[in-house]
Length: 299
Image (cartoon, rainbow, N blue to C red; front, top):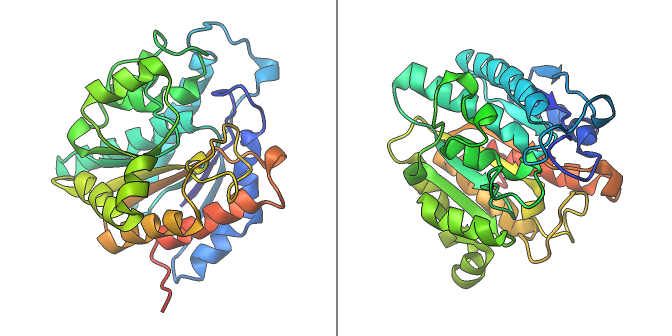
C-alpha cells in the first residue's frame, strides 16, 4: 500500500510536501507492480501548510499539527498492516516516521506480542528533544520519540510507549550530529553504524549486521529511509544535504540485503524536496531503492 504524507512542517526548508508526487511521477506504483506485487495507492493524507498555522512552541515547532498527521498515519498504516500489506510511506519530512513506526510497533504487538525491529537510515541522528534541539525542528526528533518520552505528543501516539527498543534499533549512515545529540545517541543504547564504519569495513559487512540486529526476536523490520543518507551527488533533492554519504551501489546493496532477509514489514521514503532536485533524480533513486528492498532480482 502506498501512503503519501505531504508534511513539511518538521523542517526549515519548504518543499518536501511535494515528495509524494515526485515518487508517483517516478512511477513507483507501476514499477512495484512490475515485480508481480499487487499495489493499492491510498492517496495522500491531509496535512496543513505553514501559511495556515502558527509555530507556537519554538522548542518543538508545529508539534500539534505534526502529531495529528502522525496519528492519522498510524491509523492508516496499521490498517494496511492488518490487511497483510507492506505500507510504503512517502514523505514529507522525517517526522512522519513517528506515525509509521508507531503503526508497525502496534501491529507487531497485537499480532505476535513481539517488538518491531527498526532500521533508521539517515545522515542525522533524529534523536534531539525539545530540550536539546538547537532549532526546534521536529524532523530532528522522531527517533527520540520512538525510543523514549519526548516530544510527548509523538511519543504517546497509539497510546503506548516506547515504540522501539534500543537493542533492536539500528541507526546507519550517520555523519552529521549536533553536539548534544551525540551524547544522546551514545547513551541511548541503539546500534550505530557511521559512514566511517562503512568506509572502513565495507557496506556488505555493515549491512549484514545492520539488518540482522533488528531482526533478532522481533516481528520483522521497519525500514525508515531518509534520502539525505545518500551523497548529494546521487540524491541532490533533499533539504539537509551532507557530503560523504552512501553512493548509488552502497544504498542499493543495503536494500538488497534487507530484501534477502525477508523481514521487511514497512518502508518509509522521506525528505525528497523536488524544488532542490535535478530532473527528479532523488525520487527516481528512492523508487529504485524501494524496488531493491522489495526483492527486484538482478538475474
